[in-house]
Each structure stands twice: as C-alpha cells, then as structure tokens.
Image 1 (cartoon, rainbow, N blue to C red):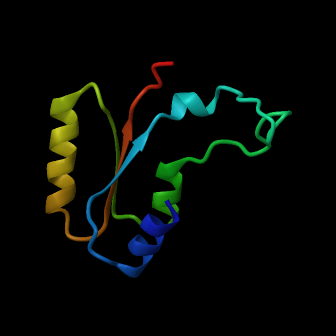
Image 2: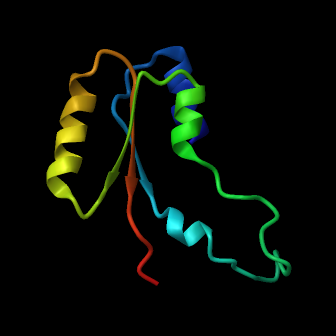
Length: 93
C-alpha cells in the first residue's frame, strides 16, 4: 500500500492500482502466539488513504459484480492521472 501511495504522490504511471480487499476479515479477531491479546491496530481504510494522498480517481467495487468492476477498470485506464480501485472480496472462511 505504501508503494501505491508513493507512486500516486509522485504522479507515476501505474494506473489503475488495484487492491484486492477482504475487509470483512479485518474485523475478525485473530489470536496467536505473537498477538495473544489480538491486534492493537485497527483496520486501515484504503479509500481514505488514496483520497488523502491526492487521488483523482478513487473507486470501490465488489468482486461479485463483474460488469461494474469491468466498467470501473476501464474508467481507471482512461483516466488522465492516478487511479485507485479497491476491489472488495468477502472472506469465505
């Protein structure tokens, strides 16, 4: 994510940047040996980060809606400037 945001700020042409997000899994508390009390950090909001970094085309799509996702990717490719698309993919576990 940091590389994407850095590219966005510098105006590098890596557009569109696609992020496969399974945000619903971020809300499930995972306990392990390294995090016996769970994560102390909350989930990040990639849309808010992309907007804060100055994104001029920021969108979110659902993986299950292929027509909408395809249209957004086409729009992102045609956009003059950096485009960021967060693709929501629900966790199946």
